[in-house]
Image 1: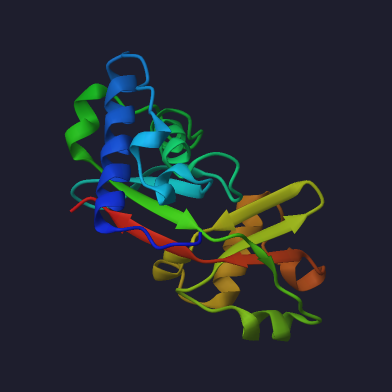
Image 2: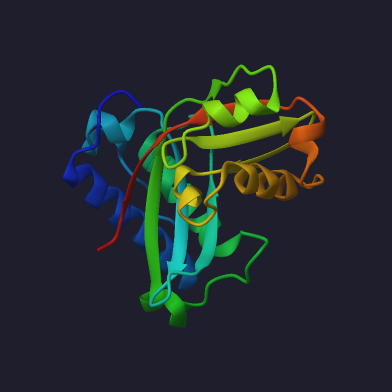
Length: 192
């Protein structure tokens, strides 16, 4: 994530996400995007998460993304918008009748960095609520929470416990075993 996105870039990404979801809901083919028609920030590789919430209420309705960049940001958003709407195993696929009641939020991620720590106390001290997204890894298991999740999970202990459970482990694994911890930040924006 080199250059910040402009307001135009953000609006384009939100429109691409909404269009991709609507096309899939109505069984239309996915739009083929011409990368040279977009800014370098959108056509350069980027990692994103697309989060869908209900309107009103703001309840989670789907969230899928990538932790590392592997394709142009605009294609990443397009792909993850569809995946969040139709492939998040926690929710049934979105139906066309729901589209007007779904809000879209996009998070553009920085590259994750390893967080070095020697003890659980040091780990807790180094976490920055509201700023850091956190990835926990234990062998092949891994899970992440975006920085926005700090708004719902207030304490560092609870945050790590919930993340362990999301990973499919016991909630206190982070206290019993030194896990690989990575952090990242996001540039977040949503539909108004």
